[in-house]
Image: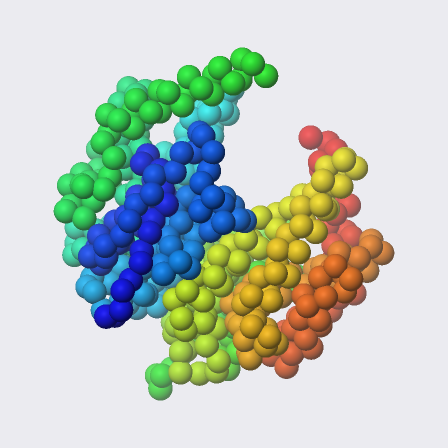
Length: 234
Length: 234
């Protein structure tokens, strides 16, 4: 592009959604300033001004223009720095439609079920949600096998859109497995996904931006304590 | 493209989200076979096979390959038949991000609030829901002014993604206004949006594919009666 680019990312260290633009920016070798927001404290003026509708992170500020919603940001990064290899979205419209479909599935069906399983008070609701989570993982296993066509990632040889979308939850999954001593990614049920998950986390573009599993596990513990004390006060 | 194209659309006549696909196909002058699904009866084999994850309409089947989720389908149509008709997504990455953001707002925030307000029996919940709907319309009014830059549509001179996304709900909105004799979209509160709505519904590309308001009003009446009786039984 030539001209001076100002790229700023507002995020929080543990958020799977904030990891997504970080990976995308790394894939495109884009330099940026990172601003850690404090979501338990007060949100910064910049965040409130940049995302008045949802007041959430991540927010990408490119030459002072805000882009919000994590997958929107990833597509924006892909389209803006499009001469920097690799391409994050696949090139064929049908493959793009598949990538968007499965990303939507992860964000609007699978992860909400996981969230319910984590915070539901009733054992019944918890169990039902976990069933949905496990069924979702089986569907994602099939999706991986058919989309990757034998290659290492959903995106093929290199990390792509769907890898970023689903991969951003892998640290959270592993942290939860550690914290709750229960297996979510099970090699006997979803072998390809398990191998993909390890491959994803050890990839150059991911390993320096993903938070440590230990730290996230500790954080999940802290969240649960906060949630329980809030619940006992209400 | 030259080769023999087979384009099939599975839908229901009353569904706003199916309308999106129809409008996009018309904008691109794509011939297609339309299959009316009976979602209150039994879903067709083709639907279940093409959309095993959600089993919902619309589904676009292009040369036997299924594409699901209405906005995904619209983007797919735009990318596949990209040399035909107007561009549905804007060309600049930032404008694309904005179009996607506001479409997600309509689908994930505004329309669900409207649906919740119409099916609830509680007057309190209804009032609260309608407040959210009205607030959303004000935000959409601002969005229109920002995105259209003085032109006729969110997409500028021609219908774009956001026009299709929000516009697809207009018949439902007007049908509801007729049925309940109450105004939701008013010239007083959201003048530019109000004028845009009339412009959209009378557009050549739209008016032939939208269902009749009276037919939809009758359908909604029947649907809400049965939804409320289900809600009161649970």
